[in-house]
Length: 341
Image (cartoon, rainbow, N blue to C red):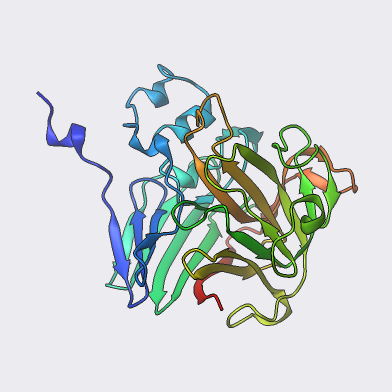
């Protein structure tokens, strides 16, 4: 006989405005798992098949795997994660193994404040002396996510910091494209996917199929079997970013001509000088996707993915941000629903 505790899904919090609806899971990473455009009813974020997997209580005891990527993917719902104190593969830092994509994205978060349009959550990490506070709020056609990372130690603390917002179907299809203010794309040295060569460096619209407007890249559709992993960098100031924060505001816009609207992500390039670029269009034939995932993400980050040095001399990986003892780093990501003309 199963008990309610064995079958209950993680508690969710839903916020709404006249234009958008967003759902957050405080018991797994304060993930944003749904971002719905109310005018069309379209869910814009990617949905992962691994979200249907019931997370095993034995995973942390290594009965399934001691691999932190396996544990992270076990129950991964898609959507939007916060990566801290690590981004990418597990690494040893400050004498401890920091798991795949960071502890915060699997942690349970405490709800501090909540209203119909806003929620503030917090968690304290174990693998780094950091407290993270996240406020998610809606106002009209804008979603604002503000993350505050505080170093609780008197000593400096270095950490990697990244956002993992993945968009998917039905929002994106074979007619979609992304417009970016990045001047450079650096592809992964080991697993660049099908669309480019490894360790390639160049303009995004030169290395990838160009989209229909300037500075845009055409996106592959569901079932195309295409893939990409790399990073966008050398972001230019983007005056088109809504409420741009001076010269430090930049971003990217996912455009869906099929549905007549786009979702624009904007951020402070001083905090996030790079954005990982991930395309998984039902390409991966093995674990974990088995050709079941369609997901495209531009992920603001403070480091390039991978290790070593890229072909243009840029460092891959690295320590990330070093925060003095007792100080905080505040970053804000805005997502705006824009009408396409």
